Image (cartoon, rainbow, N blue to C red):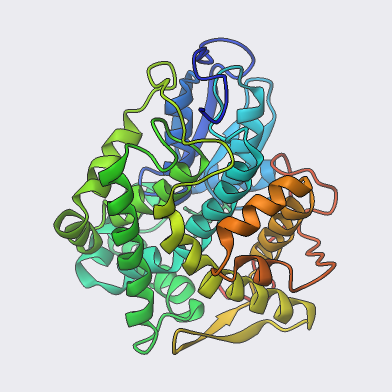
Length: 382
Ligand SMILES: N[C@@H](CCC(=O)N[C@@H](CS)C(=O)NCC(=O)O)C(=O)O
């Protein structure tokens, strides 16, 4: 039995209150690619606006967060943060949702999406800024695209952005000679897992894209599939993933009406991903949250024989808080089923180890509309 009964009546959002929304971002940005793919898939008529420095300041003023992408709705409200934005947009849709209606699939997709968003970030930034060719290319693009309105000559804009990205996303985010082999292994193990999945079926949960596809799309499309070094690895070692990127980019809700796998299940080939979440990602979220609770700005985290020195990331304390809340909100029968699926991965043990977690990231629960915040807890010098 398909997981929901809505797939026969796809209703693209061709009109209505969302039509004409503006998506602000960059053609090379991880999270912009994710939201853009969602908007393309759901066929919301929209305008894509490339960010400049001036527009980025406007985004920060309107959303509370200096990050991309941002959405300006036709009614003048602004939104930020890909996961809550997709949740909010999906709830406005009448057709088949990308967020699975089955609670078991919903929870596991949210877990996988969070992992894809956050745990693939470091490998993506590492490949972009550690390899000279990739760094030169992307430094040039950002200098001529987003920074075109900065009051400095091109060579200085290029130097500035390349140094800034290396400082913030390599030096201050635990990318060192000793951690690089592990960081690269995260990319490669995901390629292996996803290549097997997309050899078997078009999308992670079946015949159409769901939340977990959009989660992986962020890093896979705008970093790994675009930057020369990881893109060559993808083409050589994971052609099914390369093919899925184009399939995602061209997917339209009104044309894809096939079923998902049976309700209450996820395919067995998700297991390597779930195992990595239990072995490394959730233990990382716990270590980050514990350091936050102690008031520290940095912490050491050891996984699979590699020790990282990392800054406390406030947003990721909130990620853990939200995953825990999702788990506790589930009905007992869904929890039993999820326990069976996650048996042996360590995910649930890790997810429930810190009780009463409160990040204070979005105290008034206004996300995605306005979060007056900063994503780093420590003094992340920029
Ligand atoms: N949680 C946010 C993260 C957004 C984010 O980190 N975007 C990056 C670009 S992909 C950014 O704006 N970085 C700002 C910076 O580098 O200062 C989301 O899912 O949208």
